[in-house]
Image (tube, rainbow, N blue to C red; front, side):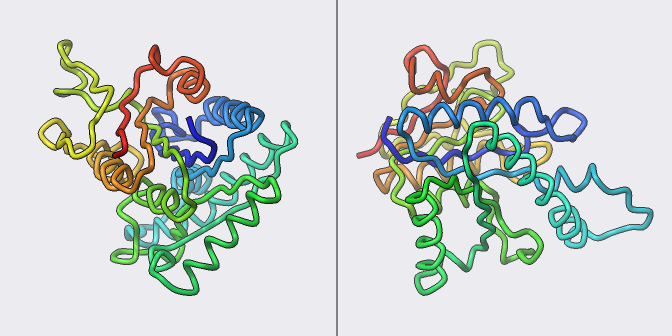
Length: 256
């Protein structure tokens, strides 16, 4: 695997079945990212979870519309989320920096260049960027489809070698994953269309699902960046993708 990796972690990986943040899994992912950095990899982390964090922090005794909920919970939750990352990475002596972004920052121009320069100087100074959408101001048509889309744009902006999309299943199957006869599609050749195998369901706590991961993977791999969809709930998934990729379940989109 090449040296600059963007890792996207979705809400379904970071939250327990009751919707609360899974600090144990979060800690395990931090351990693995620290290991990657020791092996000489540059890592950019795109992390969901702010809204889920905020929703569990606050008890609101009046009704909020969907925009108000997103703004309120993300504002409160992002502080908790990054604070946890700060504490966990500090155990390894790793400095982290927060990057909150919006879709308009990826249009050609000064904002794009400023964001790219910010993350570049962070990497040059051994700071790990933690990226999320700025949900406090990004609403309706201003939003990314989900953080899968965001991670793909970050991977392209930062000329990453590999994008890893961590889901709560092993990858893309040739039928519904619950089917006992389902087979994991391990390699996707350039230009191969898998849309007939993609289930429409969205994740329980996030905006995405396998459809968004497939869409992102297909677009990003066409630019020459290797894309892997893997199960973030598997122990040591990031380490296993490096040390024993042939034994580790995942779906890889090959580049031209």
